[in-house]
Length: 392
Image 1 (spheres, rainbow, N blue to C red):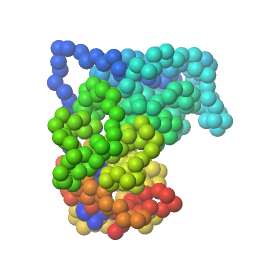
Image 2: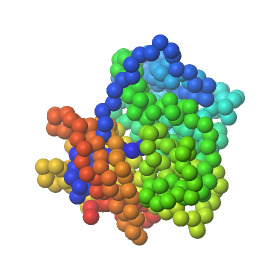
Image 3: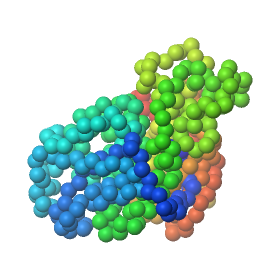
């Protein structure tokens, strides 16, 4: 959750990240009893890969299970979908138009025993198959960690992570990852590398091994005082405050702690000294959605997260309108792969906010690949209850 966006200067959005690396092979295979890999997939004729015996998401889910040691669960519908590609297009369109919830013939009996749940699906017409809505609406996700993953042929995640967040109330929904169906089907090792990189970069083992912790308002005060350099009321030795698993305490840990507290109590002590507000959390969420959309080349989402007059300034001093900048992302002139936001601070003043820190970005810009660390100075404005990136 700590990342950013473009190769820009402090006046505008700064993009940044650390390179991923595959883990060394080990003799012992991973195993986590509390991890479940759920997925929906369809064999037969598929776009780009032809007629296949196993669906693209099926193959990807198997890789995820092998790399995490989790248990596989296939989401199946009572209705059997046609094998021909043209026919499934018609069915998928009808289901989406009618907002259908296809009946499922499989269910998870011991759902409560899983803490971390991968949710996998293909992208059909810019969305999850409607069977996924049936599945997600069938369970209580409160307290679960959800990791979405999907296969596609150019649409990335298609804003499905936001959809999952809206359905699965009380869950921590991570940004997840996507793989082209043709890669999952024909380039298994490349798909495996993508999975391994995501797991490494997000400290998956710590996520899977975490024990349920209930935070109190005192914990929020403790971490707030620590981050502000103030004397803390309690000894913080051994406190489980590294919620992001990056071996340090920062504002992201404080945001996640407050979210966990809200989920547990459904109330906030407004007299508390903790100053991380709902608006600050919302600013960070806008930032996270924007950076993910840049990697996914999700232009619709990018447009939805900035003001109409937003401009972008490059290190060279070149200034672009959002149409020009997003156009170069779409056509492949600008490619963003990974990023990390360092030491972030969010300052809210009425309907405006400022996110500062530094960002490390891995990108390929106009054919030149590299990693850059830049000062981050991002401005936001609240319009109609929604935080948007804007110029100063």
